[in-house]
Image 1: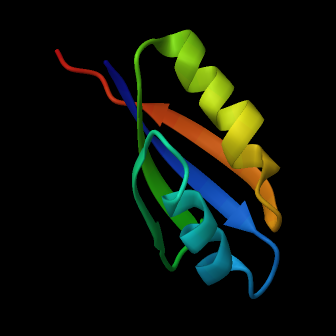
Image 2: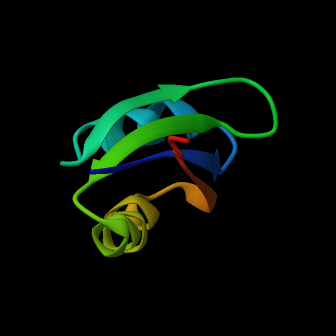
Length: 77
């Protein structure tokens, strides 16, 4: 299982609706609108790195209002 935090920038005024839309996507365990340089932070899970990439590119980045994402993969050392 691969886990990651996705830091998301949105169009002005779209953070709440983006967080709501993302929260309904399979693989997303948490999505909240926040303050700071990013507007939404989501935690996601996938079976492997390839599935994680597909989740971000095919599903998350397809949500209207998103302008940019940054994926931070969780590392267990």
